[in-house]
Image (cartoon, rainbow, N blue to C red; front, side):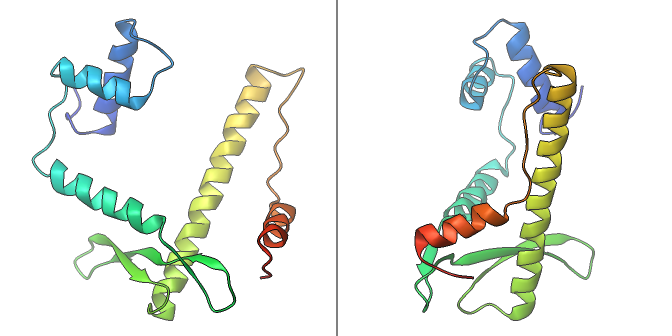
Length: 159
């Protein structure tokens, strides 16, 4: 059995939930409440600090400021950095005071995340189309140029 805190164990909990014929599809809150009630999961001692750190990160992700040109921009930006001992940390900084180096790393990492999401979306759509809907494939457009231009017009800003 995998560690009680591993992704594999979490996946096992979801399968166990389904095996017990609990409501499905389900929210992960429903699965978590079921796992908690059945004492299949107990939080790791560091879970409280981890949860607070995650909630702080979530709050920073949705903090916006208006720049001098009137654009609403994300205020706080994370950058994953490697320490001298090889450990990685996610450091947050404010767009109004961050170094260029921090912002370059943050923007590059954010772009890579978007590319990863698009790649996985394409794999999922291709698989669904080939295996579940070959006669009526779902179309996927990954060129966002027009979408971004429409948003700029909608918000009255130019890049």
